[in-house]
Image (cartoon, rainbow, N blue to C red):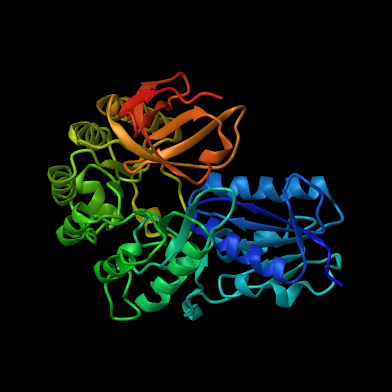
Length: 444
């Protein structure tokens, strides 16, 4: 009997993984499981893995060993990208009972029966080309924001990336089905939805629709105050999308756009579908219509073929862009990728040096962005958790605001004056008294 058993989830990687774990978690609840933290003893641990870098693989192996140490008698199931790409490697870890490929992770209930450890694990892989179904997912929990999966898979096959081999080709539900999921999220009390996926700008490929058409329909969903667009490829972020967001009442002035390299030579080696001139045009378009927009950018440091001159050129290019923050990844060799055919390899210490330089640039840009906004009145959606007497929320343009904890502000929108940047790098907020049109500190 599974009724009353305890399940714990350990999720690594992207927001897409978190949305899928949340959906799988709801299916366990329907089966009568009690959910506990992964640091607690459970009858079954479900580990949702990432494999975007070799460091991600290492973290996955560490997570598996950690939960086994917590309860050696527990049933251990491993799903996610690492499970799809290297299932035998995972199965060789003592204590792992079940490894599921991309096609089977949403059918985990079929394989757990009585949670008996049999000494040898079961492997249920799949050919990634056979993955055709789209499984809708969304995250709901303590946070007021919901990650809604609108798309899965990727057809781009960039030379450094394994994601198409882990998740298959691009696919999605119809606009009508996606909007219905957003309505369900609204009914559960969430006020903000982040649209997530592997390549969300490619939405509609499998249903002959477009991402622009989708966001126009999502705008009409009642109960949701905000929509955020997560990472979107610059070649798919059309001027029409930017113009729609600029006029929208619900889509916020926040963009996350992967650059990956600031050198056209390296972009070509990566087989990216744009050049840096197009990228700069997208940034210019956003800032012309939404001067207060937060723009996050992904970049890889030290990829194969990137010499010192290429990196210096990229650093200058990125420094000149009016962006808000960088998400920096040192290049990591991934088995089976075309990048391994590029002969010129950057030594690991040099990759780390370049990554550090970009991280320093990111810190400078983020602080400058925050300083530009100090003194402004912004609407903040506060999250519900109490962090040592503090609570946090985000403005529309993704500034993290800190105030003393007040329970009645959980999942509420409030206008604040952005006061100052504190030692934690957050912005402290002063509540706007809308009746008096004055500012006052939020006190306990």
